[in-house]
Length: 107
Image (tube, rainbow, N blue to C red; front, side, top):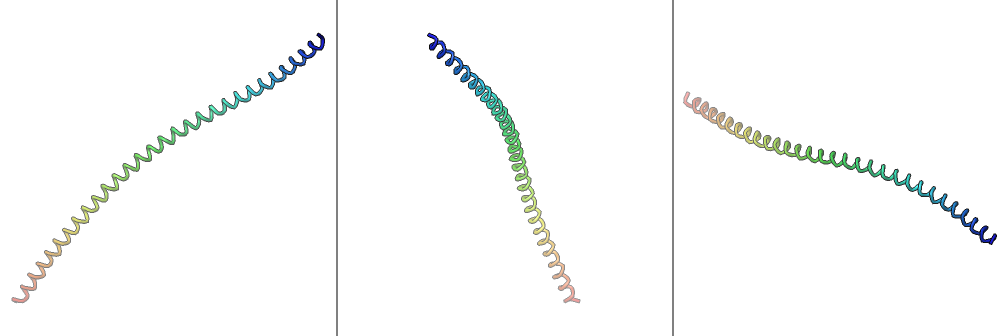
């Protein structure tokens, strides 16, 4: 009987030691979980900020592309208008030169 009591006492000591180790491990895991949860929230917030930034950059790119297309179209129109003005001016100068040549032949 005494051996049985001694065996049970040793079993209780072993279980208490094991319980203490398990509580320590539970506390460590709880702390790790808290740290990971905080890290996850931080990363989630960072991803949200980056998504907003990416959306802003995309919107800005679309806007700048539209501006560029409009500027290129305006440039093409101005180049065409300039060519037409030069052609008209050259035609007029040609007419004036022809008129001066004709006038000098008859003088």
